[in-house]
Image 1 (tube, helix red, strand yellow):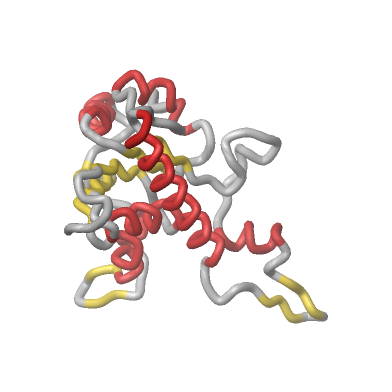
Image 2: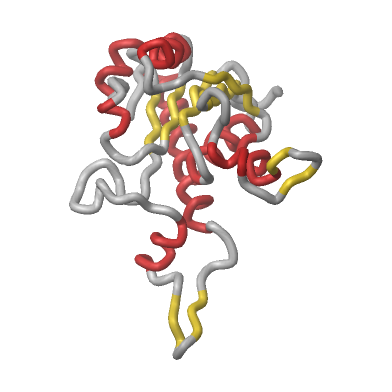
Length: 191
C-alpha cells in the first residue's frame, strides 16, 4: 500500500486493541507492518466474535493492511526470528505488561544493539515506571479509574466502546510519526 509512510517497516508484537490499532494506523499510512503471532492460534482476538464467513471481524478491525508471521516468542528460535525482523525495521511496537520485553531480552537497550536506529513504541495502561506499572489494564479499568465510568444510584454507565484503547493507539501512532520525522533529521532512533 502506498502512503506517507511507504518504505517504513514496523514489527508489530501487539495484541487486543490499543497496540494492534496503532500498527493498523501506521499500515493505513503506507508502512509495511509485520505482525508476529503465536503459532497455531495467532493473536488472541482471532478467536473473538463477531464472525463473518469463519473470520473474526474483531481481529480484522485492528489488523487490516498488515502482514503476519508466526513465531513462538518464548523460544530461542522465535526470538531469533523477531530479532532478524527488528534488525531490518524502522519501528517496533509492543503492548505487553511493563517488564515483559526485558524478560524476553528485547528491552530498548537490547533492541538498540540489534538496530541502533530503531524506534520502539510501548503502549501500556500505566506506563513503564511508577507504582502501577505492574498492573494489567484494559479499557474498562482505565475507564473506571479516569472517571469516564460513572455511577448514578444503581445505574453504572461506561463508554460505548474502548475509547481509551483507541486514544492510546492514536497517541502511540502520533509519537511514532514524530519519532520517524526526527529520525529523518538526526538519523537516531528512540524509545
